[in-house]
View 1 (cartoon, one colour):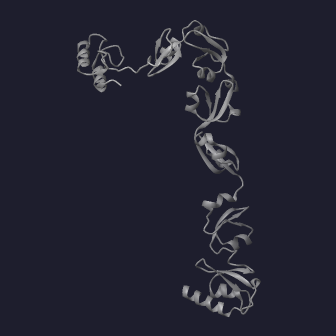
View 2 (tube, rainbow, N blue to C red):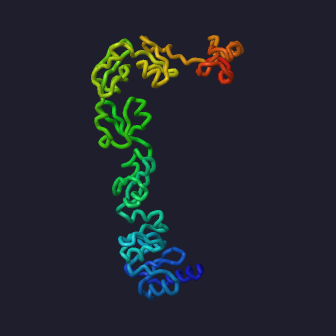
View 3 (cartoon, rainbow, N blue to C red):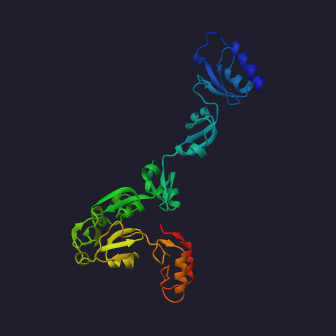
Length: 337
């Protein structure tokens, strides 16, 4: 078949007159997807040769292989949205928009529609090119026609949101980053904050020596090394002015907290009247019962001597000396960090 087509085209080219003009040609799409320009009616009917002899598709008088696609593809229509496997001529003659050779409605067909946008589902998954009805059926939030996940819904795909610091609000922060910085987090932009009054919080900023700065924002208090005490209360709290705020060791870090916040709420160790210092909260070494900075055989002997008797061999903090302390000590064996 290919040899027949090639020989026929060669014969046609030899018969073409030397003075034939461009408007006397037409494009013929062959079954293998290739294209050839044939004369319209000199010295023969080009459409007949194309359709009968070559079994091709005649693209019309004046058409050219340079401007016509012979490969089929997807075609956009206003009324039926998209149709596959149409060539450019058939698509455009039917009032459609050809999406290119080898295109498909599945891959390129969404460009036929003008009602699509970004859809955020469950505040964590974002889909592009979704209609409002489709988004609603998935229980999602539609961000509008022509919206995209990257441009209009960044807090959906990467869990970013607004963060309020006392008297101002920042957008596009992660929740952990916001809260570690002393802010209040909300999934969404600042103008949609669930409680706008939270962005104007202020209170007393307390220091370990009993001093206090009134009407400070949480972020400002943190920046000057104080402890923010009293949401919604611009004055200094009694616990702050009486000097109850002091160093609190939380693992290997130190914060200025009152006794209740330090011990009861956060499980720290409170140091009355002490300011934070570099060496105050050196990590403890569980199992080092003799205090020589090493968990070794001497410590296991001390533990066994207190086994079932008292809490002098207590390593896990439960108030007694038992098998759990033996296991805890063995797990900590070696030099203290």
